[in-house]
Amino acid sequence: MIEGFTALYIFMLSAFTGYEVISRVPVILHTPMMSGSNFIHGIVLVGAIVVMGSAEGALEQTIGFIAVALAAGNAVGGYVATVRMLEMFTVKDKKGEA
Amino acid sequence: MDTFIQIVYFVTAILFILGLKKMSSPVTATGGIVWAGIAMIAASLVAFLEPGVFANNTNVILIIVAIAVGSGIAYITAKRVQMTDMPQMIAIYNGMGGGAAAAIAGVELVKMAGGHHALDTTVQVLAVLGALIGAVSFSGSAIAFAKLQGLMNKTIRLPFHMVINLALFVATLAAGAMIGFNDEVSITLVLGFFIMALVFGVLFTTPIGGADMPVVISLFNAFTGLAVAFEGFVLGNAAMIIAGTVVGSAGTLLTQLMAKAMNRPISNILFASFGSDGSDAADEDIEGSMKEIQGTDAAIMMAYAEKVIIVPGYGMAVAQAQHKVAELTQVLEKRGVTVKFAIHPVAGRMPGHMNVLLAEAGIDYDKILDLDEINPEFPTADVALVIGANDVVNPVARTNPDSPIYGMPILDADMAKNCIVIKRGRGAGFSGIENHLFYADNTRMLYGDGQKAVGELVSGVKEL
Image 1 (cartoon, helix red, strand yellow):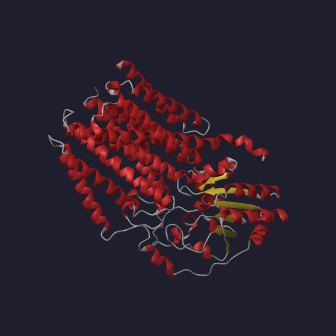
Image 2 (cartoon, each protein chain N blue to C red):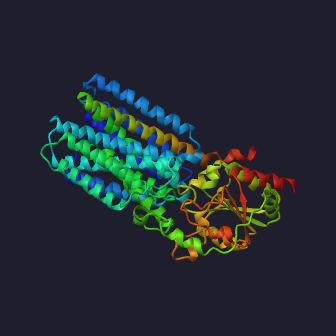
Image 3 (cartoon, one colour):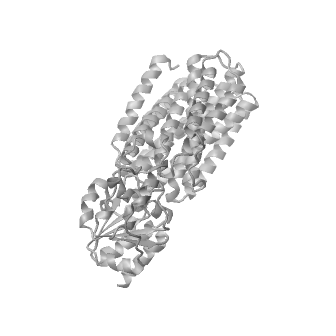
């Protein structure tokens, strides 16, 4: 479906995109950003589901199960961690009361 | 149906990139992660519609159970963990992603071995590469987690560590090449390959000091992205290729930024054992002695100061002292003292880590300055209060060319009229280098747990 040079072009353009997108991030957002990009590669869950779905036999199913569980952990953990960190930057107004 | 699946993946890729872009500004950041989250849910649901997934009901049930287990554990841990422990949690979630990519490659290779899959050299090679990078990221991140969590305090170095690492790496590559370029895939070889890759990840990470872990975690983050992209090629999944590659390149840039902030080339961090020779040399020529101060005296010094600059470090994070620090800021400002914060780019364990903690405690952004902005202000400050920071204020980085941290930009806390250092014990910092600031004439040491010591300062100032 994605063949040879097309894949290479996708790879090249995505690499530049990633570089450009993060190059404007202020230092204070670096940790949330790392966490956010950590969440983005949780897309590996999609691959894990596809692979597990077509698994045959106990060995493939076992490894596939591990893949799906780990990928789900990456996605959910990455999301919750990022949201919690970013909340720190939005609740600024509340502090005056304390 | 296939068109529908592809459209969803396409939109997912767009939302991921837009989400990352939004995350680059504090105002829109929360929106960015929500967009990416929606895209992730959509893509995961659509993955069930891929041909073959619903062919086997057992597999579908197993997938759902696996998702429940994995996300359940991750959700609970991510919700419960203290803000200060976030860096190591990022490491562990990142490692899970790397492990997942490696496991995907594992399944694919097993399928090839069993003859369920047509063999194709490009696919084989990419699967193997992704497996290697993913497996290293998995076991390496686990070690990074253990180090930051305090489960593994020592840097472990085997005799001939570099030689062993190199040999193991070459052997792993050779095994990978034998799998990748062969017409048959041998299960035994695949198993051996994975074991070697995992061990290599461990050995690669153990000699690296805890202070360098943020750079390593960031590097593994980029690794995982790349591994995901490679497995995306194997599966013909464009969303995985794009998201993985974007993270791969963004993570590489972030790693470079961090290494630059420490003024050390990445190769130096990864391959040179930190502090093995320089620290001995640095011990010799320390002049003066450490002078202790009591909390009440320190409080008086600060209360009658005009300007106080606070330098927070990892010690503040460990002691959960950020709220006390915010309180101290308030009571000092009530007395008309100007309070500013100096954040070193690598203070704590990650760039921005201190900013997150101070923001959590409700301290205004405009008081929090970075290295270039604050350094000219130190000579005009009456008191520099260093809380649990060490290497980032060590003047040997300016003065001693033999020191392993020589050349690293530091915060000039030693230039302030007085310097108060809150420190838990008398030992050297994470890097094991003696800090000459602690012996300086205008430095006073306030020993104790960060939270307790700052608490003493707060009550001391209040009583005046």
